[in-house]
Image (tube, rainbow, N blue to C red; front, side, top):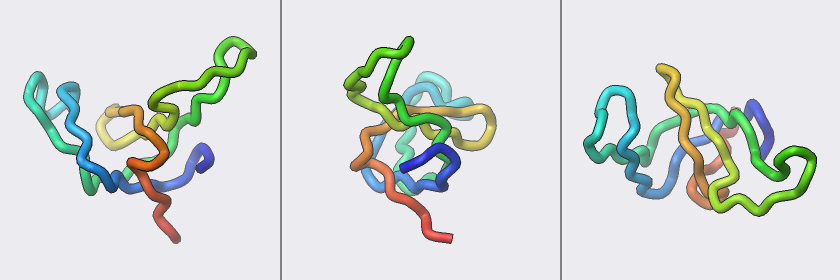
Amino acid sequence: MNVGDRVRVTSSVVVYHHPEHKKTAFNLQGMEGEVAAVLTEWQGRPISANLPVLVKFEQRFKAHFRPDEVTLIED
């Protein structure tokens, strides 16, 4: 998975920070977005992040995922 790849959320992931559903549970399953970052290092040192894949959706909304929660969308 690389920055710029289109992905789809395949697992049930509930968030409470979606712009249109503030402070209420919102399930991201089925949504599509673009990989904004894959977190493998911080300040030049390797890290082992629990949720390393940062996905950008529409409307300035971003969320972190495990690699098994998203799949690549083939063009």
